[in-house]
Length: 216
Image (cartoon, rainbow, N blue to C red):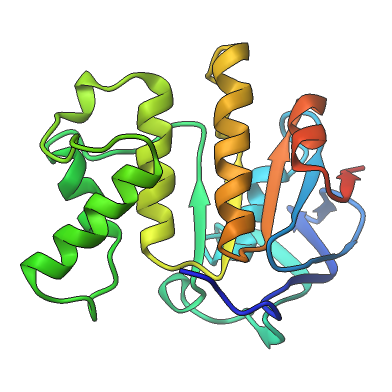
């Protein structure tokens, strides 16, 4: 699954206002396909709200300014399902009542039909994640790193044109965090997906190895 090399994520003069107060200075940023940029800042500065604005889930209490484009097309005004933007959170949000394979199936686009075809895509994703043969496992039996990899592959199976990361590494121990960061950024790079990470950890920004913006 390799995406269009021209599929860049662009933020033009983007800022958010809450109750008449601007949360951060306007942002101008271009994230090319396959590259990762980082937005840093303390808790409460608007990092997660910025991601919500990009993916179309911003609460009505916020007033956004500026424009967001993906592959040259404006995202403003589109419902979330039409933006083709994937997001990973601090919590993996796997469905506890579904198997690992069924969790991955949830991410498959509806146009992918047929039990054999869908199972092949799921098995391929598990193999890429180093989780071959785990389709029938209960998510509760997986380690934190394994759950994060399943969550990422579920997002990638939905064929996002951009990937947003809302501190998905923060709950992992240091050694595992290094491995999972590499796994996420390597897959985004291989699939040509522009990636925007928000974090308060400088090591995350270093691993992303792209532009870093500090919210002020």
